Each structure stands twice: as structure tokens, then as C-alpha cells.
Amino acid sequence: MRPGVALRLALAGNRTDTARVVLTALSAALASLAGLAALTVLAIPTPPGGRGSNNSEQYTNALLREPGLRGGTAVALLLLAVPVLALAGQCVRLGAPARDRRLAAFRLAGATPGQVTGLVAVEAGLASLLGTLVGLGTYLVGRVLLHRPDARGLLPLPTDVLPSPPVIAAVVLGLPVLAGLVGVVLLRRVTATPLGVVRRTRRERAPRPWAGLLIVAGPATFGLLAPINRWYADRAQDPPALLEPALMAGGALAALVGVVVGTGWLSYTAGRLLHRWGRGAAVLLAARRLTADPWAGSRTLAALLAAVIVGAGAAGLRASMIADMAANRATGQGLAGSDDFYLNTMDLVDRAAQLAVALAAGGLVVALVEGIVARRRTYAALVASGVPRSVIGRSVGWQALAPAVPAIVVALAGGLLLIWGVAGRPRTYGAHSFQVCTGDAVRCADPSALRTVWVPEVVVTPELPWAQLAWVGAGALVAVLVTVGVGLLFLRMSTAVEELRTG
Image (cartoon, rainbow, N blue to C red; front, side, top):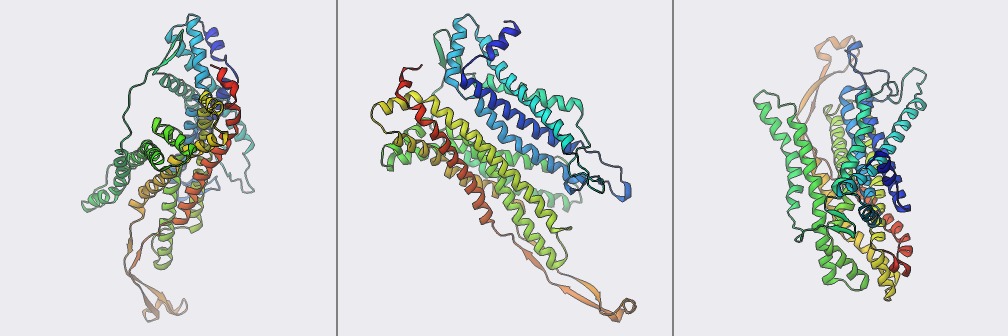
């Protein structure tokens, strides 16, 4: 198949296919912007130590000036790409039934299975390439527009540096390649034949609660950091440089995978409970759907739960910082520097978590609308048989909220426990004394003018951040409710009786 033909066939389709291409491109643009911003922070050069420090003094923000803080800033920016990539994964699934019929038509026209799979990869890759090019253009234009030094010549953003061309090319071209591979993976169980599309599925047992072991393993891994550091300190040795980052990354990944996979078990259990104790057609419809496809909750809520874990962890870290600052004011020990600096830094983390929730809500909207459109013939048949649309609407709400509420609670607990295993422990600031002068500067040379001040031992135990956890959970729940409301707007057009005549 010639490249021009493959390009023309990949761009063919109806309005749903156009929406999928636009949403995929938008997701790729946002992901590329997050990646380029993180790489720009890492590209800031570090001076060799002028004026007694190696800070980059041309910036007003300490997160950019101090080399030790840039890594965390870059990681926070990269975390924003996680819900965006999840949104892209949801967009690839949009309009799957219509795409399957189009693939079957290609097979009927003589295309081979490999060529059909290649068309899907080209479609996803081209949409992502369009998005990354738009993201690159936005990044370059924004870099010029935001380059505004103040009266002292200091910059609020790193608009004076640029990642190397190979790094930029890796972001702009790597995301489309990744999108193409994702499209191929999603079709691994689909065979397009001239007579239609066959989905190879294996019979799966009901989900098991073994994912809870991963949720426990995440905080347990974080809890190993303090004993390991003490073990090396007792032997006057430094731990391996990659040990602590590996434990933290492994623990966070275990907790995230555990929460996401465990949502399947929560969905199945919620469906069984609703089927056993629920009353009314809407509840029973939702219960049957949850037990028939319990993994739908894991797929649709993955990005939202990741954002909730980050928000809960930030709440725990903020509580720990506030406790340390209180001890610092009482004893003169603990965190150094301005309290406002650390709290403002945590404000940035909170804003990043809120943005991640908003992006994850976009993925939820796409997933819910795609599910309604994919089952439009079923819903139309229910309406034709006499089921009110309000009943179907309530069943969609039950189906979304029943797994989401317990999953959000578990994600809040998992994110808090990740940080609480390290930052939530009581810390003891030892008793100490210091001398103060009771006279003027001349008399301070006389030992009799010095007075010893004794500071008793202080034990600091961070308080559980109930209020902030409630706000994070409420924000995630509001995102789910808004998603359900938007999805119901598509319900009326998808339950028209005319849908029974469509393929």
C-alpha cells in the first residue's frame, strides 16, 4: 500500500472519527507542552560556584535558582503528562464500533490484516504528530511572549534556555510513535474480516482482591527508607545513590497499580451488592453492567485516581512541613529558610494536582460518552420496549458513582500512607541550650553578662490533614458528577428509536 493511499484511508471517516483525531491531537499537544516545560527546567545551566554559590541568579523563583530543587519541579511537570496521556488513551477508543465497520470495509476491499493494523497506527500517529507540532509551536511562541525581565533583569520563567534539538525531536516524534503503538496494542484482540469484526476474548474470572497487597506494599516500601538510612548511618556509610529513588518510584508505582487494578474488584463487588440489595430498575441495570464489565472502572478512573493519590500525598507532606515549622519556631531547629517559601512551593504542587484532576475529568467525559454511543442500540431497544430515559440516565449515574466513591477513598488513603510512612512519624528535637547577652555590646565580652537559655525536648507529631483530604476527595467526586452530567446530554440522541436501524 502506497504511503499516499495509507494517508488518505487513515484520515477517512465520519464526524466521530474527526472528533477522535481532534481530541487525540489536543492530548498530544498538552503532553508535549508538559514534557518540553520539564526539559526546559532541566536544561538550566548551573554556574560553577560564582559568589560562593552555584545558584542561577538570573531567576526570581527559587525553584529555578537552586539546582537541588529543579529535579522536583521537573518531576511535578512530568506528572501533569500522566492524566493527559490517559486522556489520549481514552480518545483512541472513541467511536470504536464505527471504526470497526470501516476496518471491515477495508478488508472487503482487499486490504490485508497487517495493512488494516497499519492504518490504525498511522491514524493515531498522525493525529499525535499534529498535536505535538502544535504543542511545539505554542511552546516556541510562548517562550518569546513570556520573556519579560523585571527592572533588575531577572526572569520569572526559564525563557533564556532551550533544550537541545535532539531532546526536542525525541518529544515531538516520540509521542506519535507511542500513540501508534498504543493503537496497535488496543487492536491486538481484534480481527477485521470482510464480513465484520471479530473480537477475541478469553473467559475471565471475577476480579480478586489481591490488588490490596500492592496498595500495602507501596507505603511499606516508603517506610523502609528511614530504617535503611539509619542502618547505613550506624556504619558511617552512605547508601547507594539510586537506592532511595528506586524505593520511592517502586512504592509509588505499586500503590498506583494497586489502586487502579483494585477498582475492578470494587466495581464487581459494588455490582453484586447493588444486585442483592438494590431496588428499582436503574439500580439493577447498573448492577448488571458493573458485574458484566468490572474492568471498565479501572480503565476510565485510572487518571483520576492517579491525581487523587498525588493530591493526598501533597496533603500529607504539607502537614509534615507545618509541624516541622512549628518545631523550628519553638526550638530554632528543623527547616531552614522562610516558611512562606515552602508553603508556596506546596501551593504549586496543589495546583498541579488540581489541574491533573481537571484533565482526568476530560478523560472521564470521553470514556463515558464513548460508552453511551457504543451501547446506543441497547439503550434504544430499552426505550422502545418502554423503559423511560430517566431510568437509563439514573443507571448511568449509578454505574459511574458506585465504583468511583470507594476507589477515591482508597486512593486518598493510599496517597496519604505513602507520605505518612516517612513524614508522618513523630520527630524529636533534642534538648539544648544557648547563651544570650543581657547587656549592651560592650558588656557582652564579660562572661557575667551572658545568660544560659535552656530549650526542652520537643516531640512533633504531624496532624492528619482531614480538611485538605476532604477537599481533594470532593474535587474528584465533583469531577465524576460533572462527567455524568455531560454524558447524559448525549443520552437522548443515543436513545432515539432510529438507532435500531443503524449498524
